[in-house]
Image (tube, rainbow, N blue to C red; front, side, top):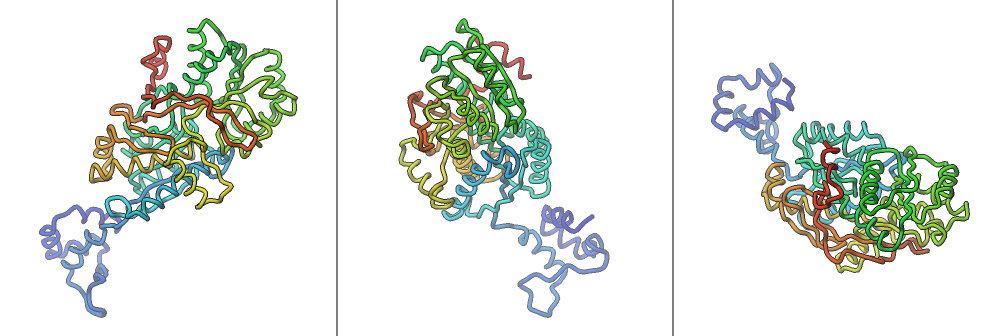
Length: 438
């Protein structure tokens, strides 16, 4: 048995048992066969502490004044354009919490890993954080492929993941808190908004993985319920950068709206080539659900001005909490940095976990999950509440139009936070979707 494993085992023994084992001389034999453990720091220099005293001090020595937490995002690869900023926001929240005294009086110690835009790597790094680093929680992920790769790891190891990005719904896990929007808090109301605006000819464009394909399955059912069908549907690989053929197909289909679920730096290529083709938002508007202020910076505001986006938060959202958040984010990372929806969701997710831990009085996963039910937090985008059963949060829905300075003007909102319905059970037209998710 290695010494680290021995220390863990000894930490679970009572003081009397340790004294008995020390008296029998068994501890030294198990630990290394001959070498005695070092004297405790309190022992006078040059003197040897009795074996029993040395062992009795071991549990106290293992009592840490820190709590380890993990951050796992793509800091390299095609998704780094989006995920690096979420990583930054989570670090900001952790810094603020530590400066205010930590969690239960303990400082948060961060272990950072890079998912590298590769789903097997996300699973591997999640396993490392849970098994080797023994973190109390992980904040991370972006794509649904990364989340689905991590999900069985967290369930098998009884870990806790706070996932900060909007997604396609049709999922719950006892080991995941979803602080981004589920479908009825972004995709479905975006389609409803477009229908109310008279849009009837939808072209569905997405990256070829879970989120876009499942989202478009839902959109197709929603359109069918309205007596419509999409005029086109196209998928390209993540990281794809040649969109001339796709744009030709879009022209031929003659839609009145492109519903865009491209992710990562493919959006940079698509919007630049759309503009190069002479197609403006006035000619053919797009609505995007994975393009926010951070991506607009990479795309170039001139290439996406007046196009639409659907989110739950914009940097321009007018709340006192948001003014403080934007100021703090830019003070830490630079006045030219922007905030956006996943950045905000990553930020307040850390605070929700803190509130649940302090309510539970423990970082134990079961205790934290129970304590988290119904917890509210005044987030930059407005009040959020953790659902009692599905571990998603209530969120206000917002539709915005991109400005030529890269910021977003809100043109519609839901008026109040929308309760999460990940399986769309409250929509008659969505019947059968839950079975598809099994």
